[in-house]
Length: 502
Image (cartoon, rainbow, N blue to C red; front, side):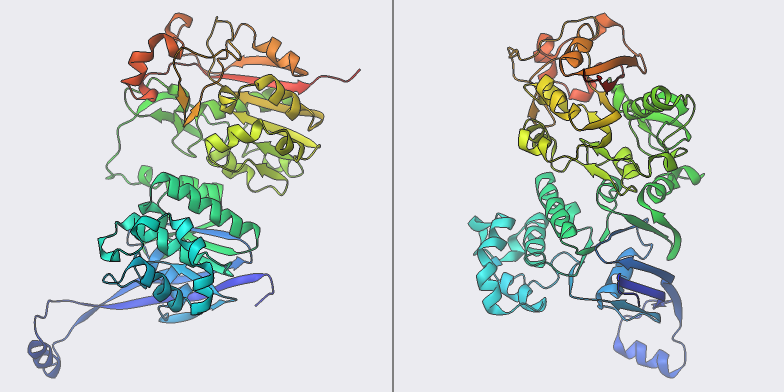
């Protein structure tokens, strides 16, 4: 096995015997055994899985329920011995496979921390030393002496994850455990996983959340009905898996409203861009093939058109063009992030929406970016920074000659921008307070002050100017309506290059 390989799965299969009929007692079992009337069906949970995972790689496993994902993880973890083939794992393993595994429901959380730590191979002295950091991460000080059987599944997941990641394992295995936590806990876990990734830990993760897989993983394997259906780049595999339902003629199709049918400028497929019925916020209509929002498709289409004169191409079709590009984006999830993740010089912005807004206004963070960026993509976060002109000025300094900044944002057409003015009511977007309003009248002037030569391009138009009402003017309706059923915007893209220095 090569030195850079952390896990090698070599033609692994797992068979289980399934009884063909129900046997209710030992007596009945013995009688049938003596009469040679015991019959079993051979169930293949994993069928000839074969792949390698490199050290430091984040490897995702996707597939429908019952396809063998969890069985495969148990084999990798050493919990199950495969019927055929073998698995080689280099280094220590921290498995988070079954919720509550390694816990005793009658013991308190305090006692279970020591129990579970012992199962993972930690010494008592080590757990005592790390006890405070474990409970701090789990945020369960108030419930520490309560029997764990009274905990919710999310609370158990907090403790399990905190114990498993208290030190840096060589291999971290995560099986859907993040799905039971609240969104803040999921973000916290993702942040911890990213920290482990940066330190070289190999991560194997199973999730039904395609967004989570796209956000975290370098490569993905798709297992369907025990067989490997596809293995490769995250972007390609997730797109294929996302379209599984479309391949099934008898599948129950979810009802959507289609806001556009056209070629996606990210994945290159002819697709429906769709969202939930009744949603007025159509800019988030997503590609039925790759999941890119229509505003992102418009943004990349504008870039390919204005930069290279490619009016009908896509990012996927032009993927070789960006091999040596230095790219920075203000997002860390979604189809565009997944696409850019294949490149060595791609730099996504880490953190939640609120954290990213704060980072953009932190001059020291901006200064830490490379000064040779070919492309900067800024998605929406500028509505929640107090001084967008200063942010754009600072970002522009990091563009190389002929470098480009792309922006998507909500735009009040035909209206004046109200930068820096406090609204009568506080309006929030993804948890961050909206600090400014962008209007189409003076957006070029704003970008000019930032030292950029810009062109404003409209993508899709669904609404007239008089239908696009500022948040504050219908505040009462906004507070009683889900935002996606209130907001009305057309898609706009700003294509901007740094002005020549004189």
